[in-house]
Amino acid sequence: QVQLVESGGGLVQAGGSLRLSCAASGSKLRILTNTMAWYRQAPGKQREFVATITSGGSANYADSVKGRFTISRDNAKNTAYLQMNNLKPEDAAVYYCKVASDWGQGTQVTVSS
Image (tube, rainbow, N blue to C red; front, side, top):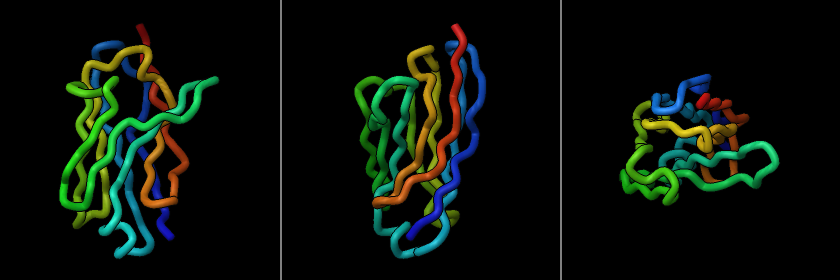
Protein backbone atom coordinates (compact mmCIF):
# COMPACT_ATOMS: atom_id res chain seq x y z
CA GLN A 1 0.00 0.00 0.00
CA VAL A 2 1.06 3.58 -0.69
CA GLN A 3 0.20 6.72 1.25
CA LEU A 4 -0.05 9.89 -0.80
CA VAL A 5 -0.06 13.48 0.41
CA GLU A 6 -0.79 16.31 -2.01
CA SER A 7 0.16 19.91 -1.41
CA GLY A 8 0.56 23.19 -3.26
CA GLY A 9 -3.03 24.05 -4.01
CA GLY A 10 -4.45 27.49 -3.43
CA LEU A 11 -6.14 30.51 -4.95
CA VAL A 12 -4.69 32.00 -8.11
CA GLN A 13 -5.88 34.46 -10.72
CA ALA A 14 -6.62 33.28 -14.23
CA GLY A 15 -3.39 33.16 -16.19
CA GLY A 16 -1.38 32.39 -13.09
CA SER A 17 0.59 29.31 -12.09
CA LEU A 18 0.69 26.75 -9.33
CA ARG A 19 2.90 23.76 -8.64
CA LEU A 20 1.35 20.76 -6.96
CA SER A 21 3.35 18.09 -5.16
CA CYS A 22 2.47 14.50 -4.30
CA ALA A 23 4.67 12.85 -1.69
CA ALA A 24 4.44 9.06 -1.63
CA SER A 25 5.38 6.76 1.22
CA GLY A 26 5.00 3.08 1.96
CA SER A 27 5.95 0.32 -0.45
CA LYS A 28 8.95 1.68 -2.33
CA LEU A 29 8.64 -1.08 -4.93
CA ARG A 30 5.01 -0.20 -5.53
CA ILE A 31 5.89 3.47 -5.91
CA LEU A 32 8.82 2.97 -8.26
CA THR A 33 7.16 0.41 -10.52
CA ASN A 34 3.89 2.23 -11.02
CA THR A 35 2.87 5.29 -12.90
CA MET A 36 2.01 8.36 -10.85
CA ALA A 37 -1.06 10.22 -11.98
CA TRP A 38 -3.02 13.37 -11.31
CA TYR A 39 -6.79 13.54 -11.48
CA ARG A 40 -9.18 16.35 -10.63
CA GLN A 41 -12.78 16.71 -9.60
CA ALA A 42 -14.82 19.89 -9.84
CA PRO A 43 -18.06 20.33 -7.87
CA GLY A 44 -20.88 18.37 -9.42
CA LYS A 45 -18.61 16.66 -11.93
CA GLN A 46 -16.96 13.28 -12.17
CA ARG A 47 -13.31 12.84 -11.36
CA GLU A 48 -11.27 13.20 -14.54
CA PHE A 49 -7.79 12.29 -15.67
CA VAL A 50 -5.26 15.11 -15.90
CA ALA A 51 -1.80 13.61 -16.44
CA THR A 52 0.29 10.55 -15.78
CA ILE A 53 3.99 9.74 -15.77
CA THR A 54 5.73 6.38 -15.83
CA SER A 55 8.68 5.48 -13.66
CA GLY A 56 10.85 6.08 -16.71
CA GLY A 57 9.49 9.57 -17.20
CA SER A 58 7.06 9.12 -20.09
CA ALA A 59 4.17 11.55 -19.69
CA ASN A 60 0.64 11.66 -20.99
CA TYR A 61 -1.89 14.48 -20.68
CA ALA A 62 -5.56 15.18 -21.05
CA ASP A 63 -6.24 17.32 -24.10
CA SER A 64 -7.62 20.09 -21.91
CA VAL A 65 -4.26 20.66 -20.20
CA LYS A 66 -1.76 19.90 -22.96
CA GLY A 67 0.72 22.71 -23.41
CA ARG A 68 -0.16 24.27 -20.06
CA PHE A 69 0.53 21.55 -17.47
CA THR A 70 3.72 19.57 -16.98
CA ILE A 71 3.98 16.42 -14.88
CA SER A 72 7.30 15.27 -13.47
CA ARG A 73 8.58 12.94 -10.78
CA ASP A 74 11.61 12.61 -8.58
CA ASN A 75 12.10 8.90 -7.91
CA ALA A 76 14.72 9.58 -5.26
CA LYS A 77 12.16 11.60 -3.29
CA ASN A 78 9.14 9.44 -4.20
CA THR A 79 7.41 12.63 -5.26
CA ALA A 80 5.41 13.66 -8.30
CA TYR A 81 4.79 17.24 -9.36
CA LEU A 82 2.27 19.01 -11.52
CA GLN A 83 3.33 22.41 -12.83
CA MET A 84 0.23 24.27 -13.94
CA ASN A 85 0.63 27.40 -16.05
CA ASN A 86 -1.87 29.73 -17.67
CA LEU A 87 -4.59 28.51 -15.33
CA LYS A 88 -8.19 28.97 -16.38
CA PRO A 89 -11.35 29.12 -14.23
CA GLU A 90 -12.32 25.71 -15.60
CA ASP A 91 -9.17 24.23 -14.04
CA ALA A 92 -10.59 24.86 -10.57
CA ALA A 93 -11.07 21.54 -8.79
CA VAL A 94 -9.73 19.28 -6.10
CA TYR A 95 -6.61 17.66 -7.50
CA TYR A 96 -5.80 14.10 -6.50
CA CYS A 97 -2.67 12.02 -6.82
CA LYS A 98 -2.91 8.31 -7.66
CA VAL A 99 -0.41 5.46 -7.59
CA ALA A 100 -1.76 2.04 -8.57
CA SER A 101 -5.06 1.82 -6.66
CA ASP A 102 -4.10 4.29 -3.92
CA TRP A 103 -5.37 7.86 -3.78
CA GLY A 104 -4.35 10.93 -1.83
CA GLN A 105 -6.75 13.20 0.01
CA GLY A 106 -6.58 15.95 -2.59
CA THR A 107 -5.60 19.59 -2.69
CA GLN A 108 -7.94 22.42 -3.68
CA VAL A 109 -7.15 24.65 -6.64
CA THR A 110 -9.27 27.77 -7.06
CA VAL A 111 -8.91 30.03 -10.09
CA SER A 112 -10.47 33.48 -10.06
CA SER A 113 -11.46 35.18 -13.30
